[in-house]
Length: 294
Image (cartoon, rainbow, N blue to C red; front, side, top):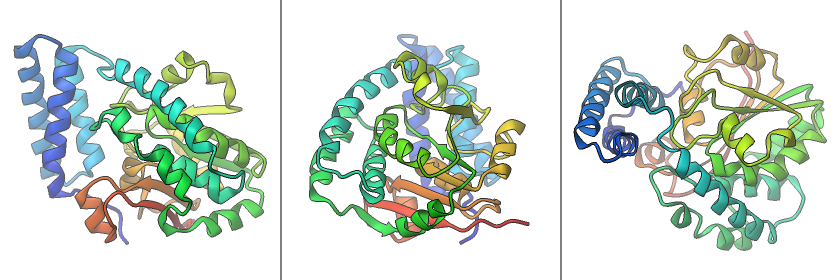
């Protein structure tokens, strides 16, 4: 498949994102919320004209909202509550899983149930039951990940997604550290919806939990390649293997010419991705993309 561009069907969700983010940032100031939402709508129309990916359009809309309201992180409180709920849900789900690669990948995937569009408790409601049921994936390329790990990669990147997911990621991260010389956890370079940044790790007391930390250099969802930092691009070029969590990372990296192979791990949450992959709703995917060295 070729690199993913824009999905016209995403407009409704992007507008809902803008509405929710504008109101969070503006608080009780209705006029400010309307101004921010109108500015985000202009960014949406321009992004559609340029046929940007949905995450790239979202990032432009979020930057407009920040510019109008002056609020750096409208989802700061949301992320704190998400992380508290996710830590408890993960502890319950982990009881049903073993310490093998398939179980740990499954636990990490379950964490991708979190979504800024959805109440955290609602998003996590089925996690314990799904963990107890065992088999999880609609598409399962874990065997390819296992083969790559058997080669003892020198550098592996773990691209994080939503803040609360980090608790679901920790057991897999620990497993990977025993099978790669270096594993670098990559967070976002600044606030973007409910995605993980260094700030959330510090608040939760998790910063020292990871041997190496890096960020994308961008306050935006996914990996918007023209906007990320040279340091992050250098890491990707050096990497032997990348694990990418969540749909935004999938949308911005799948089909791209990248030197290292990428193991995508995500839950299908929306109709455009369902149609693109011919996937059942709410299905989990462990999808391998071969590296494409030039």
